Image (cartoon, rainbow, N blue to C red):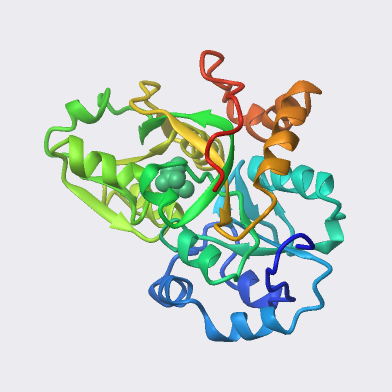
Length: 290
Ligand code: GLU
């Protein structure tokens, strides 16, 4: 990015694409370790970059939010938000390099300079703010449960012996670990949880209702319980060195004011019958930079 010392680069998109096909787990051990450790090759590539583009981290396996297509282009609400913000910062779409950013790797990716920003269902938390800064919030979701269409489960207090799945490094896993005495199976990505749910290895998947709605629309035979038990304030993750945080806050405010955000939500989550919680949206962007 031009206003920072970020190391921009052509991180080879093809490498990411091998992980990106719909239904790919996107979070196998190698990928997670590479991302968490700060992949050396990517960092070298980044340092050698020409500096006129932007590397944006997003999810590659979350339908409706960030899903990599077979053509090498991701789609989803977060992808459209990222594109709109990049445009306001002066980047055209062909200047964007996409990098998969699984939940547990996001702070590492930002701190190591492998990405310039992350737009990936990334909740603003005090713990994360120790390591990164956030523009936003740009959207507020809520944690919920995805269960079989004929399940009687009504919430995390009502799980009995059921096994719940979530993702390492997410607020979703942390919350059920800390606040509910539920048997939790953790995976590296939500698509891995979906595979386990489909095969009957686990009984429910917990994370943000946005993600669950996207999977429900994609997979069929599942329902979102519809009883959210958290507020997930989605921020744009930036390294502490970034100087773009306030400009992105302004961009987010404009996107809500001119109707772009509503359109983005409808375009990407409308088919999943997801509507933003009007009590919490639009949120006021600001207060998490620095
Ligand atoms: N929004 C939550 C988080 O940032 C859960 C979704 C995710 O893991 O991306 O941890």
